[in-house]
Length: 351
Image 1 (cartoon, one colour):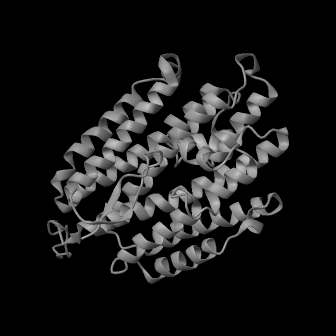
Image 2 (cartoon, rainbow, N blue to C red):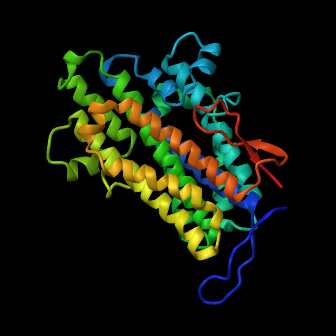
Image 3 (cartoon, helix red, strand yellow):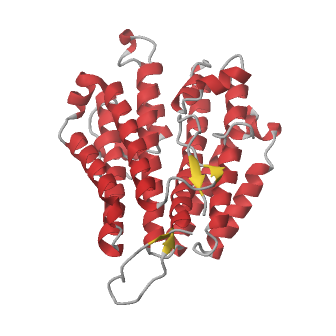
C-alpha cells in the first residue's frame, strides 16, 4: 500500500499515515452522495415543472446535464418521463443511475471501514439496501415526488451523520474536497443546460414561462428560498446566474464551493505536510480569481456557455491534479469512479 505521508500535527500527537486508497475512496464517497441528492432534486423539480406546463421537453435536460445522450438513446427512443426516470433511478446498467451510484458509494465506504464511524456505515448500508429494492412501481408518477423527497432526506441524513461523527483529520479534508468538487461541477452543468435548452425563443424572455423555468433552476439547486431572501431584483437570467455562481453565502454556489475546496487543499498542505497538492491549489486559485474579477454581466456577454465549459474542464483537471498528488496513477483497478459526462473511463485505484 502507498501511504500519504503527514507531519505531526499541532499539539504533538502523531497520527497514522493515511493510505492513498483511503484518500481516493473518501473523495468519491462524498462525490457520490452529493450526486445522488442532486439527481433526486433534479428529477423532482423537473417532474413538477413538466406537470405544471403540460410539456415533456424538460426531461431531455436531465440527460443533457449528465452528458448521457449517446448511452440513453442507444436504449430509448424518446426522453419521456418513464424512460428518463427509469434510466436515472433504477437502471442498474446505467453507471450514473441512483441505484448504481448508491452501490458505488457503499463500496467506497466499505474500503473506509477503519476510518468512518459506525453510524455512517450503518446508514449507508440501510440507504443502499433501500435503493436497491426500488422497482418500477416506486417510480410511477404518483409516487415519484415522495420517492425523491425520501432520497434527498437520506442524503441529508448522511451529511448530518458525517458532519457529527467523522473524525477531523486529513480524511475529513478529503471528504470536503470531494463534496465541493461535486457541487461546483453540478452547479455549472445545471446553469449551462437550463440556460441553453429550456427557453424556446428569445421572444420569451421575461414571460411567465421564462420566470417559471428560472424558478425551476433555483429549486434544482436548493436555492429558491435563499435567492428570494437575498436578491431584491426580479428573477432574471443575470440575477439567477449571478446568485448561483458568485454568492458567497449560498453553500452550493460556485464561489462557495471553490472557497471551501481551496481551504481543504490548503490545510492538507499546511497542517499535514502534503506538499504535492501545490498544482491543484494553484488551479483552484486561478478559478477563484477568474470568477471574482468578472461581473455576471461580463460572463454572459463574453459567453456563458464557454465560461461554464471552461470551469468544468478546470474542475476535471483539479481532480486529476489531486489524484496525481495523493494516490499513484498506475495501480490495479477494481471499482469505476466516473466523472459526469466523462464516458465513465476514470477508474478508482485500490492498493
